[in-house]
Image (cartoon, rainbow, N blue to C red; front, side):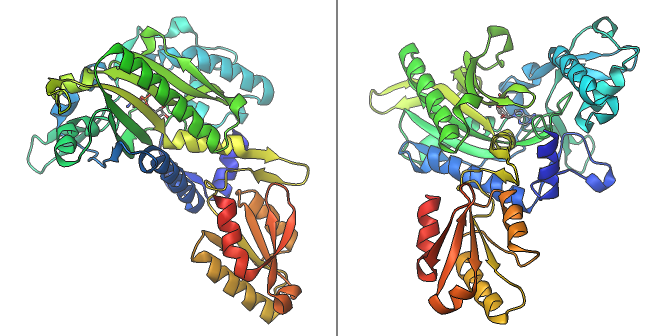
Length: 448
Ligand code: GAP
């Protein structure tokens, strides 16, 4: 993880939020490569979930809603984590995570000593000191801590209190009638959305894994309310979502499903399965598939008039809810390879932030540099393209391998006469000579 965090900062994927003011726990900023990566991820999700299907439409709802939404959805009462406080040092923890932290802490202390602990372990660092560790019996009774982030609106006192959304989902439910009335969807159908959510997490940590501001990509799929339909669509969406991660290159052995026990399910879920990744900090959830039944539409008093059977009913909902930030983190971890002479991110070309880099073989030959610039301009019109004329070719390859650029094009002496360039494949490191006229099609074909 430390290597991933360092690479992410060094190369401009992810920075600590507000870093020049000592940061702020649980918030992250995405740099030039990070934003490209994230946009690619979201575009692939949207294509797979919306454009490639006939019965899914999209929405982009507001982040702030009338607080009555959160009252009705049950979030004000039940969107909580178990909070405990250490009586010795007054640090606060999630009770359900305490044991996990202990185990992790001792593993780390064993290897590198307390000082080597990274910032995300700050809380536990203060709580557990090696000579006099604070123990479970030092913790207070568990309290329910609500995760919703309060905001205050308006200019006159008292200001109106509402919340930043804790899940993007409710924006879909409150627009259910609008969408049925304004588009031609018929059950079974889905509404997809990607957007920011906010949770006042007790212990943010593991880099972007548990943040206070993050992005979700979700599908709410509305079906007829019966057990058979519920089972059919739950298992359909479970498999579809797992397939997506594999198609984009996550290794099968690092993925698994895990069914939720009844006592860990969210307040809205009749049934839930997580897609988990075998991360450096253990098997961890990065997407939840939830059978929400009629919980939400009933709470919002919404029904559906089925034109086929001329009956009114409350549909059931199967939800797929993934985190953009967690997915990006695990795609990075999975793609990270250390080889004898290089570090390489073997990202799927569709996710790679830069698709192609162009190099002049030498810097001091005007005609080679100007030809390289013209090839760069030509490719830049179609792909995210980098130009690099620093150092030697070997170093330029290494710099692109480290950020996962699938192709590097070099303009050399032969280019001037024959109008051909070399194109190097990131994974095999093999080079081919390709005519400049064919370059665009060559890369396009490889990218798809
Ligand atoms: N609408 C259902 C819902 O929000 P969830 O399991 O609470 O379900 C879904 O969240 C996904 O959102 C998670 O699988 C994870 O990828 C992401 N997520 C949740 N909390 C997060 C956090 N604090 N930081 C980063 N991602 C988070």
